[in-house]
Image (spheres, rainbow, N blue to C red):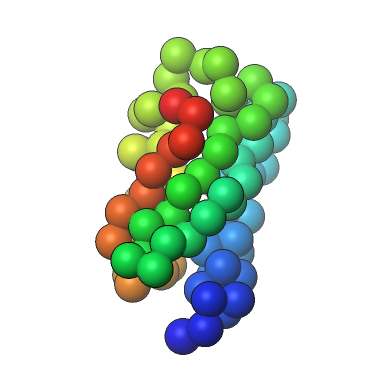
Length: 80
């Protein structure tokens, strides 16, 4: 799979989570997908400073990406 195709699949997966984040004034963006299949994300808006941001990454975002893009080895938030 090309890097562009992988990026698109991860972004598509994030689109299933974004409406919930946006309801609370937040969002998530892809910063990087490394060669060793680690997705680095940035929480933005209200999610950036939310005390629950770690749980948002683990229970919502990570589950969605792992389900939709099983090639991904890890998900990291660069600002959580």
